[in-house]
Length: 414
Image 1 (cartoon, rainbow, N blue to C red):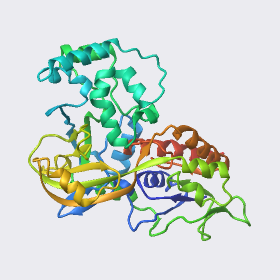
Image 2 (image 1 turned 120 degrees about the vertical axis):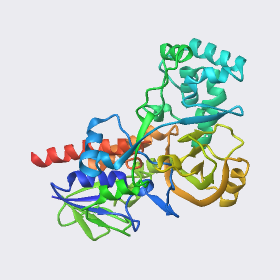
Image 3 (image 1 turned 30 degrees about the vertical axis):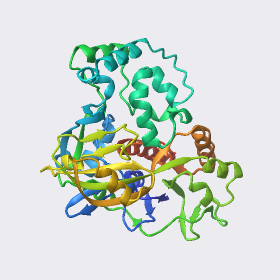
Image 4 (image 1 turned 90 degrees about the vertical axis):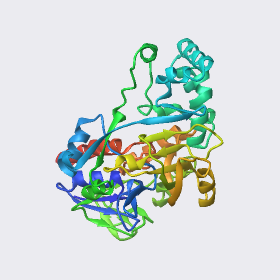
């Protein structure tokens, strides 16, 4: 069986690697290189993550097994402890904020008391009108209004009242009242799987990406223009009137894909127009020294919502970081905003990415499901952050590829 994979990002490479020993696999990639939004750019020996900072860890043992035993051995990774902080009220406190009330108490006792009172008395009935409502029912009004709502306005460029709360599952540490009280009385912290993470000893994420791509048949500089069934053999797919496959796996964004499929129904085409995503602008900086790995900034007067201290992923450490802002921001605007922060010394590079983050607007679930149902009926498999329109981290992309590869192998054996 010949399988065509559309896109050589992490999802396309992972599923290709998993199926390559069993089938005739070919990957079509529009760029001149593989890796998608996870790929870094070399800037004078610094691996610049142009679309956020990508690192690896997973709560899924099969994902860890695949990466360490079949792609890049564990000995080729450094394990790094996460040290994430939040700029808050002219101070810097530990992330996640709900476990840092004692730190807030040290400089604003009244605010800390209000946070505790609100959290312990908020009512969570499990029914949420929107993301704003979700935050209030989970954390209370004070913490929501002081941090979660303004920060989420920044990172999504959208009012949380107009967003679905579906993106938060597995993304945020959600304390119950018992763990919240424990954090007040002890030194307990969150137990998220990314409290530590792995980064290649080469100091470049591309080492992992290139290992993932090894021995795969990738055709570069090939945009997908048309997808249709072969008029002579209805069991085959034809891509760009040229490439023929028995089965195709898509990682092209769902807002684009329906327009490429011949005779795609109007309701599916319309659903694609209702999907939203954000571009992201990043700037690589030389900085002062810090021990942080991430710093989050909810202040709406600043363009930057996140500092990724990528230099602390490296060994030896380098004093560099990436500032991230949502949308297409000019070099001059990023520079002007950065000059307000004495931590940032000078810019080293700049980038605007296109598809960066899925936006969970109020049409998200219905629109996505219409497209996915059509693809399922049409027998087009789809995979990845934008192929499934979910805010997946790299390890989840690999997990979903493992599930799909098992499904395809099982079907072929029947």
